[in-house]
Image (tube, rainbow, N blue to C red; front, top):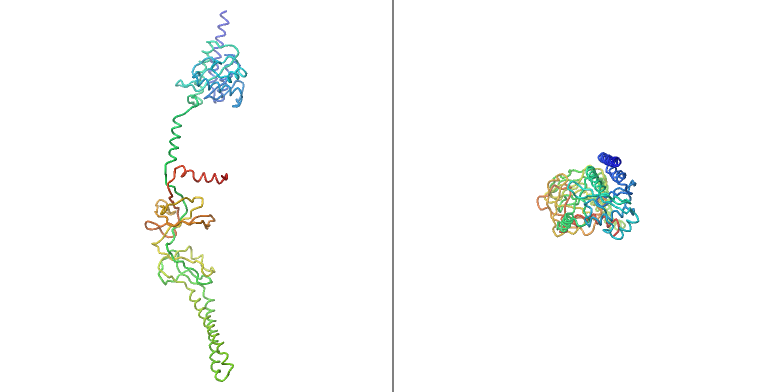
Length: 439
């Protein structure tokens, strides 16, 4: 009688050591989960076992990957949630059907074996983070509960070595998370000054535009970009070959008309026909004189001179040399280097409300670390197309200190009114979403 009993104990002990060896040799969580619900079947003779971690079924006996929508999985998770609420998951004990609701009892009867044992998994601080649900037909003995509890200690140690877990808590209010969320929500209502960024350029203030005085070809730009000039200095010279020839022809035509008029005036005393032509010839002389004066006026316009002191503001002299231009076409601008303003091209998507004399900060591309302060003076009512092809509103700002050099470009930061931080952060994303979905 003693020999079979001794052999049975030795076999159980050997199997226990073999399971411990396997779980400590597991390299992955999936491999360990499979061992936990399958390899101890020879010890306990259960029909099925389910590994539950943080209220979710991670493994089931004989199943490679349990489906979250499976009825048995839903039953185990529902039953464990109810036992957690009753604080009955911290000890290795037999699960009583009376402690579950009617739906769980019905599912238990239809899906699981009648005798169930819960073996908890605990961390080093003794807090439960999961457990194993064993189910079989015959009742559980006290010795088997002790063995299952001892195995659970080894299971917990192996599981925590592969995957660090937090204590399994009932789904409820997590005050640290709630407090953090409320703090972030409160911060969203902090008033901040709204601002937008837009490309900007330093342009002359009250500059004098120099336009082409005639239709012709530019022969030479006498001045260079940003060159200082005085009133009367030569700026641009047009090709005067045709104009000079026209003036010479007009002069000769006037001489011919005057000679014919004098000849008929001398014959008018004796010839009635000559006297009758005097009025017509006088009109022709006046016409030719007007044509000569006009040709001389055009010839005098072949040289464009400065009407005021300042600097010549234009891009490149070589671009104009040899180019035909029309009357009124802009050539350059004369500006006072000490009087400049800021021209801002605000994209229509960044249009916000600006207060009167809103502050503006300019960061030049050539010196991005030095801010230049300005005050908004004018904002265009309608948008217009920029040279780059975008629609933008023009904003004009006045510098509060010494202005930078005319022609420099950079990025202007225009400040608007105070708005909640949420509007400041999510204005553009919300506008993009509304534009995308058409709300």
